[in-house]
Every structure is written in C-alpha cells, then in structure tokens.
Amino acid sequence: MVFAVVLVALFILRIVVATIVFLFILPDGDRCPICDEVTLRVQSRGWNTLMPWFRTSWCMRCDWEGLHRHGSVTPTTPVIRSPEPVSRRH
Ligand SMILES: [Zn+2]
Image (tube, rainbow, N blue to C red; front, side, top):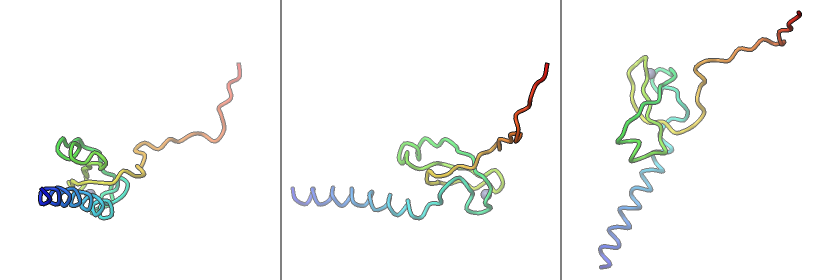
C-alpha cells in the first residue's frame, strides 16, 4: 500500500517538475525563437488538452511549430490615429 502511494506521489511530482521546467524553457510572448517573426496561434487538440496554460504557435516564415508561454502578444494591425480629431464644418 505504501509502495503505491509513493509511486503515485512520484508520478505527480514528475508532472509538476516537468511543468515548472517547461515554464522556464519556453519562450515568452508570440515571437518565433528561430527567426523572431510573429507567430500565429494554432489549435492543437492534444497540447491544448494536456497543457491549456501554454499557447501552441506556428511560424509562417520558417514553419516552426511549438509552445509559448502566455505573455505579451504583438498587435498584428497597428492602430494609427490622427493626432487631432477631424473637425467637421457645415
Ligand atoms: Zn520562424
């Protein structure tokens, strides 16, 4: 009985340690670690079910696929606003 408890505890500990190691290894944000291009978020049923706290990404330029930590995301369409509001005269 004690053996089973130790085995289960070791199994859980292994998952916790692997997750913590992953958190430090994986890149933050949404930039590709190879070519520094903005990656797209893709849906991967396996990874999203196993580790929903990671972001599955794909790079359009170099075809890199991998996991990212949830972090700052680069806006794809920069919003450019005119410095002054346009006045309308009738
Ligand atoms: Zn890339």
